[in-house]
Length: 612
Image 1 (spheres, helix red, strand yellow):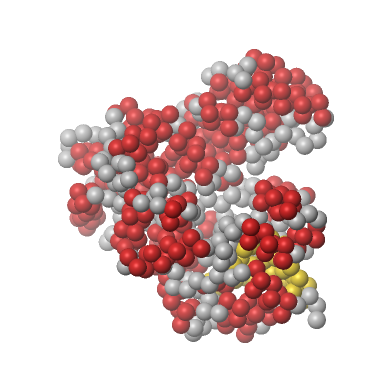
Image 2: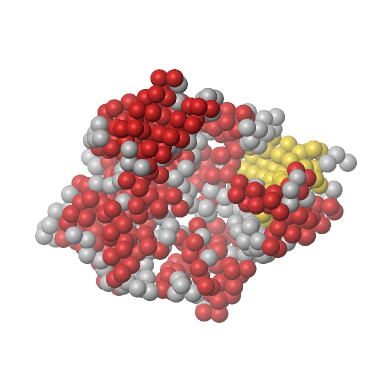
């Protein structure tokens, strides 16, 4: 971990809340001393704190970092393990201990903790920031950006042998590639160039002109997993396309003939094409001697898709899908299940997270028994609810069998047993004969032919005094997306893989254009399914707060409040003070008019169905 990364994680999140005030002040003093480079003083203060409060997680974490800085990684691990014993949900501690395990030559343990850190709090932008803080990656990114001004691909960057070796040894990078869709134009150009470089290395290896070592194969496998996650959204040159097609044909021939397959060949093909689409792909699972990196690649690209294909046949159909728009939406998500996700933040930590939610009055409510997730997509949403409320019974429905199959597989992997999945159209749910204590439908109703009709159906299934959580697109916040969609239509891009890649490369080339600046900061821009959802969705409605307020009044529903980040809530409170303002839609409308991107993702809020 370099200096800037150590500073970012110097304190961690695990400061004991019950520590005396003077201990809190001492911790602040220790952190300040550390940041000023006074390591000896910081260590002395940490020792003083731990003498008084041996379980103080913040002091344990900082002590661990100080041992890391002195290259004493065994003592660092000892301290950081104690810190995690106090708070196993501390992403900073997981990252820090992973760094020491890597230094101690324990890559598997390091990877486990890196992935937990990513799942618990290093998701989204933080991952990219940490990657670019790495000295080698940062230097390569800067060189690529200088070599390709205003261009999506440009000249292929030349990575020297030392840079490639350092990149291949970067376990955090590999973990990030395996688990998170990497976002941001600079890193995408870096990864695009890296893939091209590794392809040339693989070609040389196969031709006998140079060997790709195990570390490089592991890096190529991780890059292949990244490309599978983003659905091969990266650009490639014509030369790359020819070479990759040639390698895919070579791999297909070897599969047909039963010939030996070099790991470099398999990794190279997987970085450009999904392996499960190859004839005889299942035979790859029979080999017993694959390196661990190839095994993980095959799990993702062959075993999991085959399992999902079997699952599709077992998913019950709860309702027919008769509405034409619903049929079109189903087809879109059959081809491109959405959203793309891998890590479950609660994996291994369900008890701790549930305890935190109950202590803070959070979660979906401890007395909820029957919950409907209407439009569950690929299962991230229902899995989150089910793990926090293991006593609840969940029914999760969606139009897309592909999405449902992914959700079922992930749910089995996590050992969660309180979710029932079924295919259904919200518009036809009124006939299922069930009533729910809670209903959640986030990011779904605005894709129906008539969102309010679907909303009324769901309300008919909600018990009196039941709570419904809703997510809807904002007219104000989606203006830039609407403009982008209109431009996409005028230019004639098609909602195909090639059309989406072409669109993205033009946007990357024109990224300084104000019309695209917001687009390239969105999560959806960095995957094929996300781009299709953003630019080519077959149906999208956007609402205003007055429209929502009128509907709630019509249905005699109580508004319980919006879900927003603390900074936005603080800003709202400064302009509209008082607890009552938080549940006043007129105040929220006024705030949105002054801050039109407030609900950039969507309005997410809860309502209560009042007894008749």
